[in-house]
Image (cartoon, rainbow, N blue to C red; front, side, top):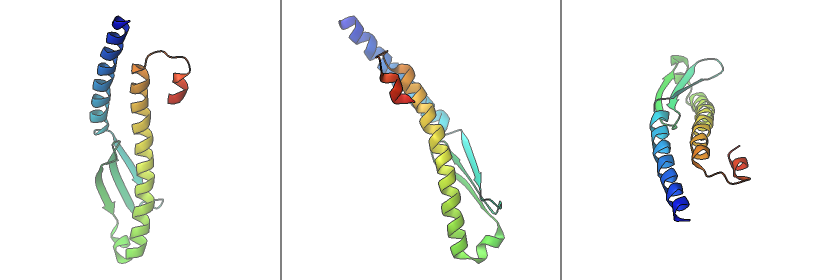
Length: 108
């Protein structure tokens, strides 16, 4: 009984390290998104940290339009980054889980 418990604790510690490493790696994965006409471009990490925003000079003339562009484009980029983040972290978590029937459906 204790051998199994110790083995599970060791596996949990390994999984925690893998999650930490994966999160660090996701800081280097860049997600680029642009508005449909290319006037606004954003880059963020898969951990959803904004790294760059590029705004065409034409958008600077209309504050309301620029705000709309920012909201739409940032939301699309955040959605992409979140999908990458969740997929990567779920894979690491699933790998570290004990083989309990039915548990694998939680990570699909």
